[in-house]
Length: 170
Image (cartoon, rainbow, N blue to C red; front, side):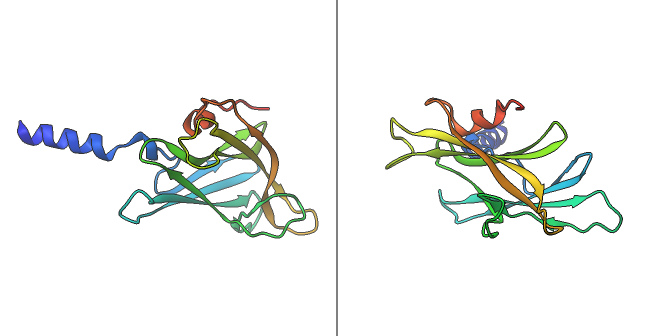
């Protein structure tokens, strides 16, 4: 009986909702009519509150002999690729940044929600910023990329988890 209570308490302590990332460690394939998007998730442990998850994204279009494309995140179509990873971070109390992939009207869309704050994440004026990226093929190349489509600041009181769980298609 004591062991069962100990294990229950241990599970409650380890299963913090603050680290509730969208994708568990490993690979998650999302099939679309155009191809397959793969989300690779890994855990980076620092044995303290600064541990985090990292996502990288790959895409393989439906075509004969198609290869997997590593997807960079671009701020605009003509920008050079510099970011290939998204970090999902959290405080001990709540998520600070996370991402979610959706298929909307047959198109792959990546949302990144991040708490924006001046000094600390506990600031009264802290609010979530939601970025929307679209999967596109570069017109002059056969390369696929995720291009920033929009950025919006959500009302105060909406947290990162809520922002990603209440997405509505455009």
